[in-house]
Length: 319
Image 1: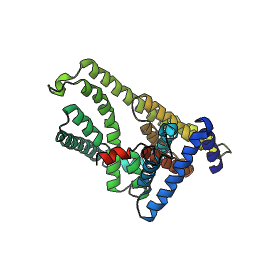
Image 2: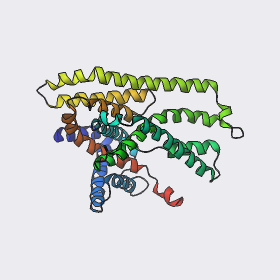
Image 3: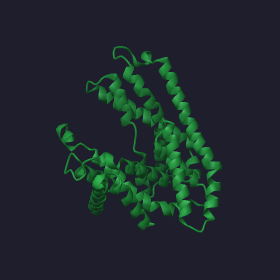
Image 4: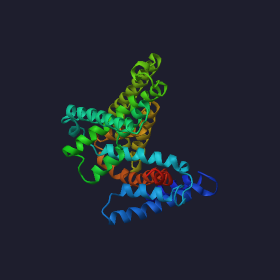
């Protein structure tokens, strides 16, 4: 499997740009990410910040070892999809059902309260109401991939704090639908009258339709994952080739990611749902063992790519 993975990655990289530019960029990303992660590990710091720091250092606004982060955008997107798929397979539905109502309430209240506080803080900097609301919505959200990865590393995912954190993250992922639908309305809202009075009925109906499509997409993924996917996995398990189950599982993750992405949700949410549904099947542990190396490798690529987009001169100028 490692040999096959390496061959596929190099083939993909070589075809990305003339002269193998993507291959060189990918080499720089993995080498620097590994070096910085080792240093952070010696210092007792989590590796994910190390990947971010590595990306910022080698990015186009710093040393410049990687000049264009968009060239490996596809690999970074695949990385986060596999990351969320792997995390979903490590979850137990019975654990999440305990105190679901309380966790849901905490998620909604904490997200709204954080957004309101950050909106008020933005107003102190003389920003307009629309801009402040957008900033408040953005600052009320957390990175599902980062938080779940840290909880998993610390073996705290099934503790009370871990379950509450997971519930808040899932609530935030769902609330993003409404936030994204509200941004165009805020952009059209006059600053001299209350925003609520400026809502366009046609825009509201369009937003409602998008929300209904998103819900239908999630329900479709869940139904297929519950009724069809286990049977397909059962047939795949009969094959003499051990990689067949992995191929089918990754195809299910990518398929769910495409569906949720087409419905206006994040692709990561679809991959997470696919992993979560597979976690309820007898093939859970075998798949988790097969996907873990791929997930960890692509995770390094993803977070380092995020770091590439950090504008260090701008941060220094606005310190």
